[in-house]
Image (cartoon, rainbow, N blue to C red):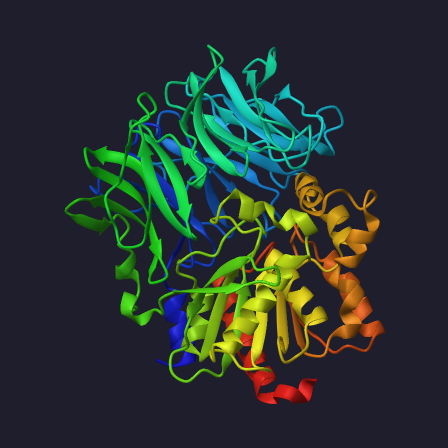
Length: 609
């Protein structure tokens, strides 16, 4: 199979994201990209009685947000070209393709969440909208909107911006949401009533401790995870009695998140050395049990019958899929493998690879070995940084491996999946600290192991991965990193702070230890734009022109500096993309461009230095 046909085959594998289960537990909805020019929403019965039904078919990406309370349809969001200014629509199962707008077209503000009240008339969401002026604001508020008249009622107004994640109770009488008023590093849980008359804090474990919560189906209790003493604890909270009950409180366990499926036990997603391992927890007794065994990571989403669960299954050789799993076996609910000529054996499996960083910290990554003789190595750095590279299918990784590149996906300090203590270590230095040395030492470990060669290592990644690529090419000699292709990566952390979405600024403050006004020297020191004169390797800058997260201002600023210092660079922009490149037509341009860029840099070798 040649490069073009192989790329076409990889991009024929639909990329599944955002699965949500209806409240009655009968249907699951998700977004599939790469089957069409944009991502679309599909739904299917979880018992396997029918195949997927396509619910949206438009020129813009569509993603599921939440189900209508009666399970007859769901709210989906769409933006324009990746600008993240979402419009919420309602689509009914019996009327696929018919999108009923619930919020205004081309909004001047950003929306978080969106849930429909049982009365079918009220919509609850958060938005950075000033209700008096109708203009965009720095602070996000919780709104109740009448979908017929458009009238909005402010239910809650936090003191500072953040990600509120409003959740309407199953009974429709209260709204759970999150605040970070006390410290950017912390998160507390609040509840307001549906009339906005009572707004109170219900879960607070300290100003710098994060709590993540959602409703149990009884509409009275909350399931939550809370940070404490270097770990996360899992518990329930009775909102009427004000009582907390701990279900998992063990420093040896790493619970990443938890949720309450309809009609079943709680699901606690644990990560063990970068691999997901879910456990089922009875909220009454605290008794734990295991979901059906599968090959790969399995997130149970809803119990279909006793011992049988519908859930999300994935690995490096198993693209993410919704499956029905029981002790007797696993079968796809979507027919994923029927949509491609590829088979699992055509994909390169992930290998566990470990090394020690500059301070002795053990760091893990996933290594994918090239098909045939390797022409070089590409380091693909995950974004976040509060995220993780898993043993999970990635079309870009598979394309690189098929074209002769070894690929390393490092889980540097700050990554999730290795415990809260490991995750929090990135804050000791702030962005651009020892986590970048974790990546460098990973490259050196590959060279020491004979897997990589000097002058034949390139680096790429999106968002924080793009920032890491900038750090590498501006700090490391070409024998370590000879070429970098940052995608939507921060270049000037001050420019990024002031140009990004307002709800993302607290994250920068948390990671850096303050705002640019408070610690200007750290922001200056950690900004790659101030070190571009050190670049001795090849540089390809990739950017989505509608990106509201790491905005094109980052590119405009760094290009001026590159030209001022006479540093050559290549620039690849996409007018119809936001934060990351996702449309299949653009990936058909990006992936071969990256492969050719790295291949040419490796062929030139030490001459770049």
